[in-house]
Image: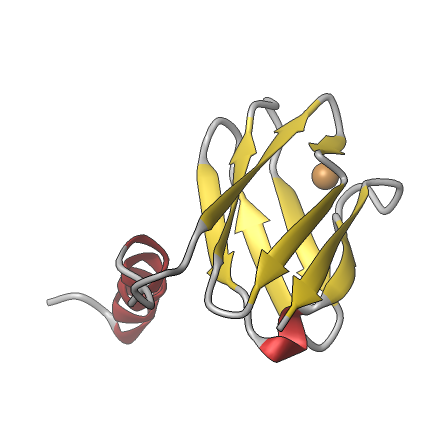
Length: 106
Ligand SMILES: [Cu+2]
């Protein structure tokens, strides 16, 4: 039997890989390489998906206090859907010098 903890992890994984996309939503890809978010600034609309692709051998996060906290494992990708609250400057919790910005256009 899966533990409660495993179910919670599975739920989190499914939430990442099977988001419900609005019809006209776009996916905006940000590469994470050598401790840099590239591009550092992206323009997005509410409902868009932001996907970070981590090319480094270490884990990173994309963290905007009070809005989102996405863990990006090494050589993996992770994503979040832009909400109004996600308009933010974000950083990596492990490497606070890593910074990026999502500019939300309603
Ligand atoms: Cu990092």
